[in-house]
Length: 144
Image (tube, rainbow, N blue to C red; front, side, top):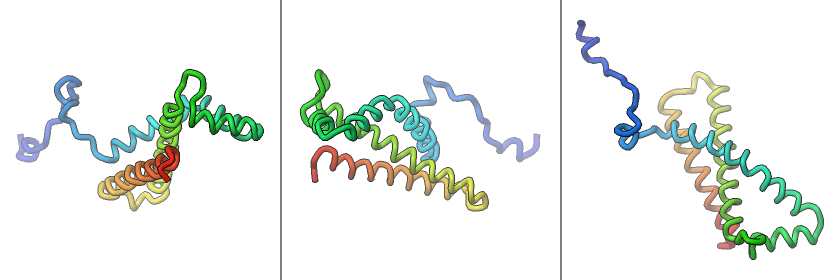
């Protein structure tokens, strides 16, 4: 064996019981997984989105009912839970949108794609999505 072959690292399959607890996923990996998760969340909450849109634009009475649902609740569902679902939807939309813009930028500028850019853009994506979610969540919960 040559010296180069001896120095090369050996890559094995990850053992789900031993390795996953210590494996550190890079920021780009987190963004990729969360991009998929946010898409699933938006798809699963599509009936809730359609209900919100329908009740908010149908009439003045239905808009008042819509506002009351977030304050008082809707039947057996408390208002704070509806706000949490709306907050999850806000995060999912923002993360999916910003991550999609990141992917479009990387697709358009092939020569600008590098490991450093991937890490920086992933961190920017996570910070922007979480920061905007916190700002809009504070507005949703009435902090300002």
